[in-house]
Length: 497
Image 1: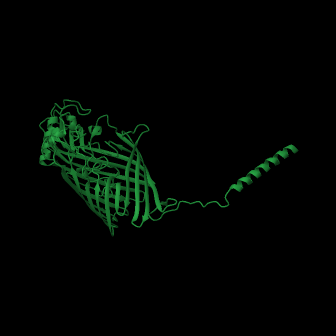
Image 2 (image 1 turned 180 degrees about the horizontal axis):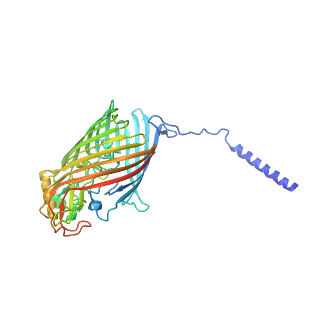
Image 3 (image 1 turned 45 degrees about the vertical axis):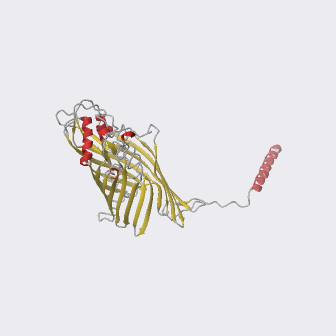
């Protein structure tokens, strides 16, 4: 027993001596902890970065959705590809999951606020690029610096309205106006005149939204190919040879906006250079001269409506000559529509409607013949109560090739598909839809949307029976030119933070 007591006392003494030695090594006074402080200068959610006078905010959303009878996400109508052909290769339901992350920093200086903004998305989509079992895509929506009224980087075009392509809808395929909701490279300056009045001027990169290489927004109808699939699949006449020249001069954009308690009024204008590569694949063949196209927009938003608190009406109208992408725009900008359907015409296999939206057409010689387009788009947004809301939206779009451009296009089409059909490549697109939203708790919304799309084309008659195979369609059959329509739906759940 005495031995045990001796061992315990010795152990305790050792611990006390060790603790005393360690305590002697500690500083007499610990440094104060620097806690993150709330920054109230720029609204809720901002905090000071420790040790600086810069405020930062982290935000974003998590979204899961599914579209029905679509050609692309989100809710791209079945107007081209396998969806347009209505064959068994189409994915009838297209799922998407997306995580969006935003980073917003602001610092007050003697020149005003210096702001940086970054918005990136991680996306998985049925049939999407790299969207394998555990794959996906990374996207950069916005990345810009703002200083003393200037914006440098990737941001929404100064031409666009605040609602872009979604005056009330949730999808990104309501055409009839401008939509740069994932950002466009620019150097812009905005002057604030007070009372909500501002004006902007901008030099913007035309490559992505306005003149993407390979989408054939200007093409040589005489060199576009003589196979039916080239013209009837909606993949773009002349995709085997790129007739789009590289960008030379940025789009020149101006905007004036009045944004007040009653709503918003905006007018915008843009100048857009049209450049072809060459008359043929060889540079020795020469090229048509460059031309300038343009686009103008007027937009109106009304708030404080008598129908209820928070209700709004958003509407915009756009006209373009040689700048079609300002009217038929968006993250899934449609260059060629090809919709197949049934037919009652004797000797025809199926019917088809074509809609090609290009800045201009040219032949083996001569100038570019510009295409004109206009569109009207809008929505009425109504709140039933704090938890439920409904939007009714629609648009109308018209594309006109003109006499010379239409003749060039029709000659190329007839050389490819034969037949004795008549008419021109002009077309109209009408869209109408509705979406209802349920927000059971703050920042969590469930949405259900349905949209009808009509493609009204201007050819009549039949193609030749010598038509080659078109996608999954057989060779040696005839097609009747006929208007086509389709329904599209989508369901979405989104959590903002």
